[in-house]
Length: 275
Image (cartoon, rainbow, N blue to C red):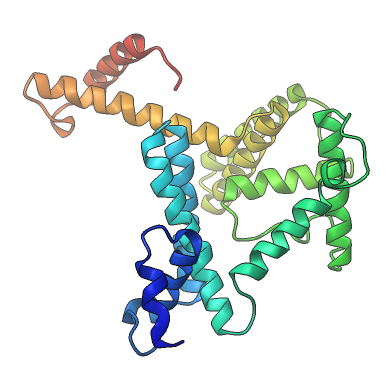
């Protein structure tokens, strides 16, 4: 890296080349930032995940004024990884962009190839999965679950594992069967708890959560988004309970469950919304 890194970085209309130049400057071993120089793929990965969730959060809240900023933070993560890859002689930003471009062209033959665009969304999804299956075969992936990333959030990974198993016929036929499975898992959890078996409780709770994710998949609901929405609803309503307590000069820790539950029901009746 040379001393000419400053000019592109100072261009206020530099767009993506400006951001790449800024990252190169930050990573410069002589004049860069000590913290940025020390970072690796592994140390940056948690930030990448966090920024992706912050993008999802802004969308969930319809905070369009924040979304541009959050998308910039997420883009920075790709630029960061590309800079580290470039320094190691592995890849750079352009090769990353070229690779995803080739992948998108290959996965959309009805747009970039000779196939007809007169297909339904379901047919397009099937074609997409067929192309991805060919890609996995090319990479030497044989088992249906082999390339489902271990580092995914647990809810997302559970859903992906189930979808892969469903493609080869290992799946409940409909939602009612999954509901019955949830009831079965809940009973097994209760039995484990009654038997005072912590290890079994841990296992059965995991089975119950896995079954709930399965139900979400059968209902066409994103479990991560649904839980994120429930978190938001709980936060909103509990904050309203705390506000009502404050009106009478009390804090939550000064109250009791009966009082807070009564206030919760009042807030819930007024709130009414599931979002």
